[in-house]
Image 1 (cartoon, rainbow, N blue to C red):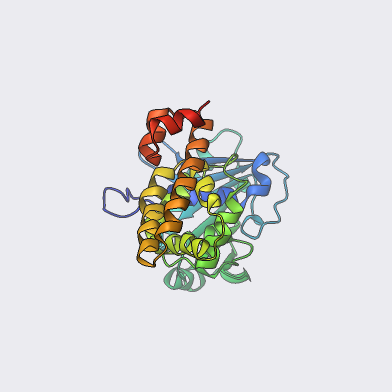
Image 2 (tube, rainbow, N blue to C red):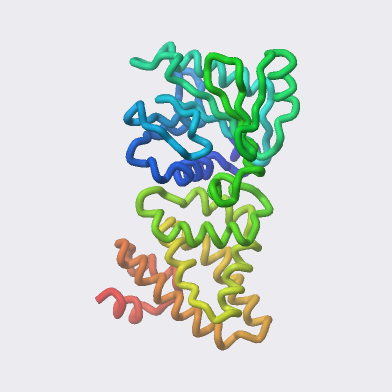
Length: 302
């Protein structure tokens, strides 16, 4: 896997891990996730291995229907694409993983490749050179038939909004309806699976969408506590304050809503402070994040 930070690209892979965990949220008690699993002492790493426990667990989720006990996933960010060499490399990794991992047989393994665009060259290679058959089993999911291993290729942009919200939304140009759905779905999920990397990449790539969501909430006089709660639980409230919340206040002033924003800012800051204090943050840290006075923070901390 490329070091995307060193090449100046955004690092999508931690967000991909969290997206997969939320896609398979109903099965979390029975799955183990090995992220960037190192095969040998040399730098050979698999993006993600999802292990079923128990082995005979049946997964009805569309992206996991082919899963056996050991499932290798290769992810390509929206800045990258799935090449023929990538396919051959990961296929070789599957052989090596079976050869060096105790109690794992080649027959236990499946391969899943995920990218955001249609892999035209790869599919042409698989059908014309490898003589495989390709069957689109559901929207955006292509089964590769004719190999000993179950193999699927997922074109994430064509996945179902309803069934694959987390994985499909991992992109640029996020739809505002999907961003809103993610916020709502997140409210009761961050206790079990982190969303810090997931929200961080979405804020990096789609800041205007989240600003629009908060501005819509203000214009319709709806409470905005949900945003602060979600981002506090995700552990990125400072980023949210910097990128979205503060920008929304400025925009609101320009629209003539200064008085309402001032009140909303204080109320939101108090709620954020309460959340941070409840999680054990120091008063000094809370003051730095919210801008509340020490007296007010001490009052909340009693």
